[in-house]
Structures are given as C-alpha cells and as structure tokens.
Image 1: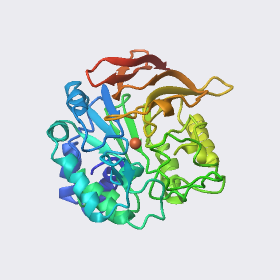
Image 2 (image 1 turned 180 degrees about the horizontal axis):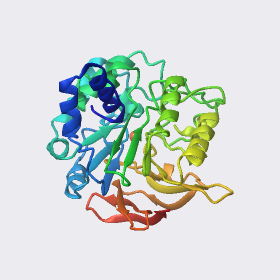
Image 3 (image 1 turned 120 degrees about the vertical axis):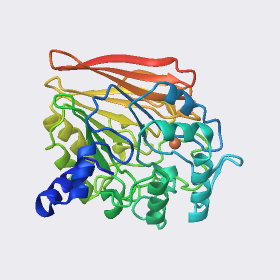
Image 4 (image 1 turned 90 degrees about the horizontal axis):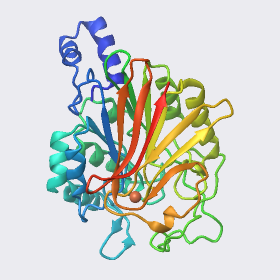
Length: 371
Ligand SMILES: [Fe+2]
C-alpha cells in the first residue's frame, strides 16, 4: 500500500536510484486500496463487530452513503466464536480461513469492498483470540490471512514489519487528513484478570463486566509501534484521525480498553494534547454499542472519541456501564459510524460526528468545529 510511509520510501528510492517504477506509482497518487491520496476527503465511514454468519446488509447501507473511505475497526469476523452455540472456541488457521471466506462471499461485503476503499485494523475476534495479544501463537498466521483478505499488496511495509499498524495522509494542501490505524493486538501484554474471574467461563455471553484490572507495567502498543506513532505527529496534517479497535477515553468498564493500560492511555492522550494541535479525533469500536465521548483538559483542549460497535449485534448491558466522558449516546441499535468533514474558509474544519442505523437513519449526530 502506498501510504505516507511508503511514499517516503518511494521518494528516497527515486533520488537514490532513479527508480522509474517507483516514480510512476508516486505520480499516479493512488494507492492499492484505491484511495486517491490527492482527493479532499469529505466523508469517512467506519464500523466494527460483525458476525460473518449474521445479516450483513448494513454494508449495503454504508455503501449507499457513498463514503470516500471505510475504516474497519476490528471484529470484521468472529473467528473464535460460534454463533450457533454461543460459545467461544480455539481458532485454528483453518477455522480463521473459513470464517474470512464466509465474509468474503457475502454479497453486501463484496459490493462494499469493490466500490469503497477500505483500511482495516483488527480487534480480538478477527485476530483470533478473545484476550491474548503478543502471546497468541497463531498471530503471524492470522496476520497473513487478514492482510490477504484486505488485499494488502505484497510490497507493502505492513507485511515486512511486525503487526498491522499503518498510516496514510490523504488530501491536498490545507486539507490533509492523516489516518492512523493502530494495532492493539499484536504487541499487547496478556491482560491481567480480575481476582476470582474464570477466564474461559463464557463470561462475555453472560454479559459480565469488570473482567480486567489495570496493568501499569503492561503494554498495549509495544515499543516499536509507540516510536512509529510519535513520529506520525511530526508529519504535516490538517486533521488527524486516530483509529483504535478499543476505546481510549472511556476507561471505567474494565472491558478490553486502553484503561487497562493506564500509563499508555495517558501517554496517548498527552501526545494528542501536546502535538495534535487541537485537530485530532479518535474513532473506536469493540464495546457493542455506540457513543460519543470527550476528554477536556484544564486549558480547554478537547479530544473527541466516536465509538461505533455493532454492525450485526449490540449489547444493552455493556451500554449501561458508566462512562463519565460520554457526551452523547448510547446507541444500542445496530449501526455504523460516519464523519463528515467541511473545510471552512476561516481555516477551521467542521465535523459531523454521526452514528446511523441499518436504515441509514441518524441515531447520534453532533457537530464540532476544530479551530
Ligand atoms: Fe466485537
């Protein structure tokens, strides 16, 4: 994929070796996902949590909204969960391949994938294990299946380094949108279970919460991804969108969230606060409902996080968990998320933060202006 990092490589190569092929790719300004990197973005759709054997018509609704790009924020399949029995199982290469194929042969998904550029990151169920991160022994095989499913070109930098994180800058000068897709599975320390918790007792199915306790020494992103992420803030951008499979700002659920790694959560929020220029927003998934959250610092800097989770299913009990940062929602109907961008003459950017249901109706709609 010819994202910002690859383009940089491309330029360096062109200087060093007059690499004609590389220059041609750069000139075309289109990456392998079909994204015109010179195009001014006006609509970004995103979503998470789709059980591949359920009704996937939400993808038809997403396509009908004609977004410039769709961000798949994890659980694109449930590779360790059997919807018929309601039980988790140990995924294998074969079961993961089978489940990707079920999604890949769905007509609504096929049409979306054919017509709308897609960037994807994974969460636990499409990674293949409910709670393991770096310790998941199927991790590299799962990565190969994942990247193949999303048509990642073989020369992409994402193949050649551990994990699936990536970034891209799209848009002309003064309208550059940087999209940063974080990998919250490949490097994650095994989460610390709450005392007395029976790890494999089907707790999720029972709607239980408070499963994990905070781990101040563990990592979510790992060292290399952290270095890479800090460098991303040195790239010029007029708006940054940080995509995480799990929630960053809401930290009270004890579910799979950045709050379980409070040191790294603070680091990310401080990075956005100090280097985001007031023009950084978060999008996330995982929790099986939708909501809008905001973290406001003493000096007035606000960071918004729009969470959309529940393309095929939602969970009312999860939505009842407290979130003192919530400013709108929760949305319990099946839905997807959408950002509309308007670049104002003043130089500000106006954002419509939205959650829409399967019929395409607004379930949440808030407007913010980032000066
Ligand atoms: Fe999910």
